[in-house]
Image (cartoon, rainbow, N blue to C red):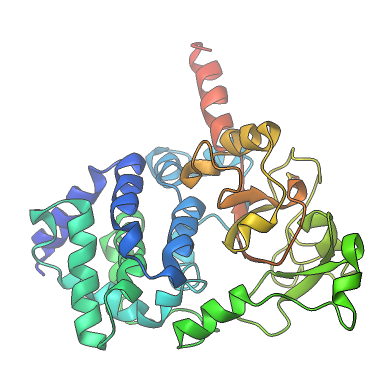
Amino acid sequence: MTVMEKTRLLGFLEDRSQEDWLRALDEIGPSIHAVDRDATRIWFAFWPLELRNALSESPDPKEIARLMDLEGNWRLEEQIDSSVSFLYGAHYWARVKNAVLTEADATSGSLASTIRSIAQKVGAAERVDSSLVLGIAAVGLMMFRQAGVECFECSKDATATPPLLPRDPAQVMAKRLRRSSDGLFTFLKGVNRKWDVRWEEKREDGIFRAINGQDIAMAGGDTGSDYRHLDYRRPAGPVPVECRVGSCGYCWIGLLAGRENLSPITSFERERLRYFGYGTVNAPDDANPLIRLACQSQCQGDVTLAISPWNGELDRRHDEGRKKLGTA
Ligand code: FES
């Protein structure tokens, strides 16, 4: 693809709003293999256009980060190859990036048809069904949109950061669906039953247990371990926490499996997700949505999580900005 064609592709993508992207995800969703259907939407929740636009449009990104109370690592351009590792399609990440850069006819159709076209190319080249790479193709295009031509091109041949999920998608699905055991006489334990919380499904030790009815943040803290070597926001267990009462927004998670095994979302938690700007992919009437606050989600069964590398208050930027402009 020539420089002009890449610029044209970027322009085509820049004309699409977050809602356009979510509509495209709705359209292709049923065709994405089940192993990545929810993971794809979770990636889009973790990396909303609003965050990218706020940072790139400001003459002072540091001030915007301060206004948004951003913590962790919110710079997607530094995580091009690690942010995708929780998707099964990460196995094909370098091929996807190259396909995005060589997709000459990308702007001839809709966003959804552009995503499908890249997935078909990658699927044919890798000899896998395109359903397995459809989600990562959508991520690849959004990554191109957010990272920009130069940054994306620099990373085009790099593979996704290991470890990755097993090569066999059936194996991944089976593990997510497997019901945990609580030792001998599990069936007698009733309310004292414990559940598996897989906070990092690619690692054998990426798991902790939650007592029936215990919230995920509290259960993670009960491990008694410090995970600050992974992320400074994890002083008490593998899930980032600070307030434990729904105020700080540190503990937001995506549910790769078992979201129906959590307590239904409350109006308080739904409002907090809206305030933080995390709930973009959640359906308004879904009692068990994909994105939750770990400190507000009680375990009633096994779950598999993805953890966001950053947290913040996207709405606050608007409030502060309006005040500064005198329009609040
Ligand atoms: S720990 Fe603060 S919102 Fe959950």
